[in-house]
Amino acid sequence: MTDSYCFMHLRGQGNNTDQLRAALSAALPAWREHGMSPWGIWRGLFGVASNEQLVMLAAEDLHGPDEFSQLLTPSIELVRATTFVPTVRPLDASPCAQPGIYVFRFFTVLATDVAEFIELSQDAWTTFEGADAYAAAPKGLFREVADAEFLDMLLVTWYDSLQSWQTSRQPAAEAKARFIRRHQLTRSTVALATVLAPAPTS
Figure (cartoon, helix red, strand yellow):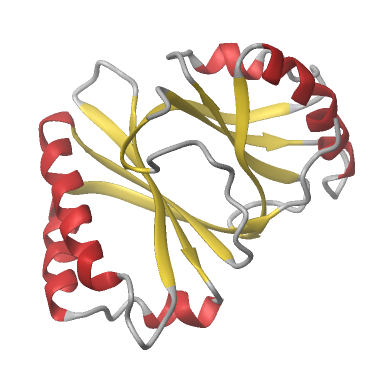
């Protein structure tokens, strides 16, 4: 399993992602030279501005967020950079490639509740996935690398459409009970809806 993933919320200049895409293309060879590979690059549907993109880079060794972001040009604004470690998913760093909707949901939880949070998520997926009413698949569940009382968890879930995302809010009873308990452990949460962006050239 890959050791670390860096989530970066990036903002470029102008009112679209042209300048940002060019900067990512320029940074890609340097990232790869340092053993960092893109797990995915996304543009926003909801909660992400027209000149912003989300990037997740994978690395075999544990790196701090500065080690990932310092290879970007100074013209790129770093809205957020957080290093995470994978939990039960993904099992490898194969890039996300499936067309559809990717929802990034951040949960702030007590560090002492992280293990239960992960267990609840994994158990809920046994009935959440494979439902006839919608198409969805959790792609990754990550834990923030920090020595703190509260930690952020990041869940990246794929849906084939916005309709599936909406329909999945009413999952099977077994999954719903676990999601309710997971919500009780959550101090705050925020979601960003995205689609995959064209891969940068290098």
